[in-house]
Image (tube, rainbow, N blue to C red):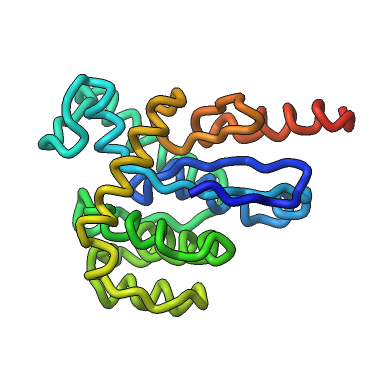
Length: 211
């Protein structure tokens, strides 16, 4: 759902909690260096599995097929560990190894936009720092409490309308050229990946005449 904002620069963030790179980006955005720039971040939850299926010509909720070769997956694991050290962020392997992020994504879509960033932070930390199962109702309830958000139930987050909404949002994202997470969109320009966050900020400063 599009939210009307009164800020000069709004940046849309497409994310899935299961992405370690989205976890890194969320921490960078909430850091003092970026948080103090006067930008407004509009968080848009999407399913990375559904995005990958759409790219492969499959239905969004088709069974998962690992898109990575063994060498690329080994590089990804090493890269994630290096980046965690580089950013000085705690990082522990998620449990389960391939967590089900759909309940948390559906719940994020229900949370008020002004509370969504805080809820996202709580879920990212629960998954990547505390090794909590983010499909567990008790874990998600604790994340809502930490964010000071309305106590939605997991049943509400996983009813047919919530799942349909996540699919629709993911399809719309794909139609806009979103193919992975995290992806940032500013004034129609797409920046994919945590490693493009600096380029995004540079582009925003150029537009505002601060370069």
